[in-house]
Image (cartoon, rainbow, N blue to C red; front, side, top):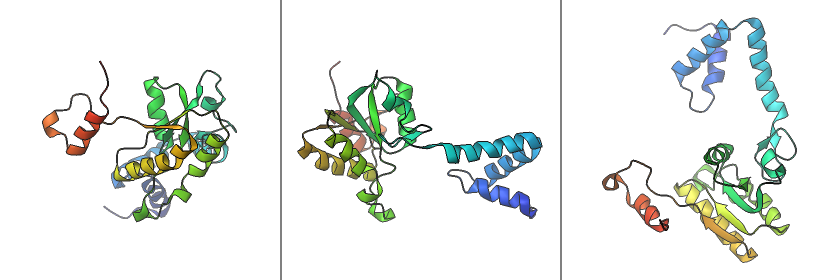
Length: 199
């Protein structure tokens, strides 16, 4: 491919710096921006700036919020004694889509990963401990992903919280709908058996 003019190359590079965006997608997005009217381009740029300046973290659960307290934490209809601990904002959004959980959340902003230099001190675990020490929390559901890092983080949190007299549970992990047993790995099958329930 021939070399791009500098302003276009700079735009492509910006898009490529985003997670999951490859060369072709970045180039397609850059051309989409070029096809915008100047008014739309300004509006697009303003949306990026607004997201950066107007979105912060909820001082209670550490989820993203445009207010000091996010709508979930501010809701009187939620069960504030039940806290679901997740890795990131996307996990909150995924659980909220299901509409089955009526508690509140705590976002860790990652998992413990010594290989990446991420220790417990780099996560929002201290803030979780502060919430529990304030009282009123009866159960913490650890809903980190079923990865090596997610499991290690879940175990760490469990060991940390159990002495505080709060119930610590782990979400069940198992077979996705439509999966065949013969193709499942041992860990998935083990989780499916462990997470069994009455029907």
